[in-house]
Length: 304
Image 1 (cartoon, one colour):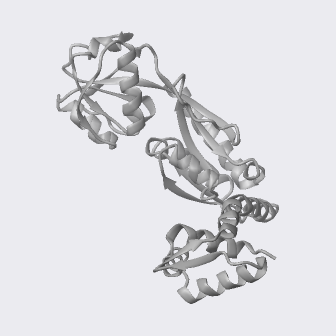
Image 2 (cartoon, helix red, strand yellow):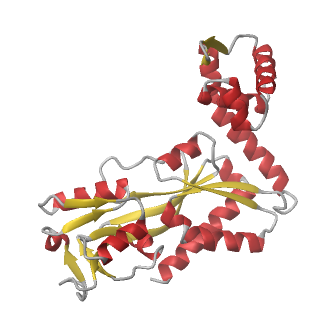
Image 3 (cartoon, helix red, strand yellow):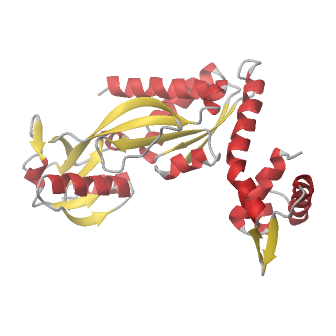
């Protein structure tokens, strides 16, 4: 019989390449990892690993088992969590991955409400940008992933295999210094009005979207600065070093001192969603987390 703990050890060995590194990742000793791998090989009746120098390499059988391990572990986790939650969410656990601007806006509101309603439910938060966060979900390394995709973007992510919970629609806005000629503009301005400006670019995906929108307007933005840190973008714009385009949620996650926001045409929007696996969506703790994230998104939209 294959045990879930043995599968977790096999995945750790496959990802780290050695028993000792897998032990460090799992918080156990190298001999314990070795013993569990021997037990797993005995259970399946065939070698799963071969040593090549100082590293371990998967056999064909090992590769097949690792390929199925994420789904098996996700299904077992769903069963364990659902059984634990029968007593009223007293033992629920949710692993949540969010992109930074979601972590500072939607997530705090949602988790505070979740804790008030279900104090026994524990949520573990990590940060990752999509598509990495979505891959973590598919690989069984988290239970809920906050993600986004731009409307009409080429190569938009496919989420057909996931449960998609819409949270809000986020519009891109321009940031200009307070003394900029467009700072007091009411209504929207065409992005082409900023064609001759110096640009401060944000995260890689926002940067790619900026270039795509600008090229659609007939110009290539001159990017003088690029940073993944939203407060740094705001600071650079506030110092008069250029203009930027950021999602509205990102602007709301910082204190935009010394800058003004300007609505842009054509409007560029991104869809903010919470994602989970179909099995995990049935787990009460995960379902409650999705509900609170949806409520937080609705409140964020109403406040604008």
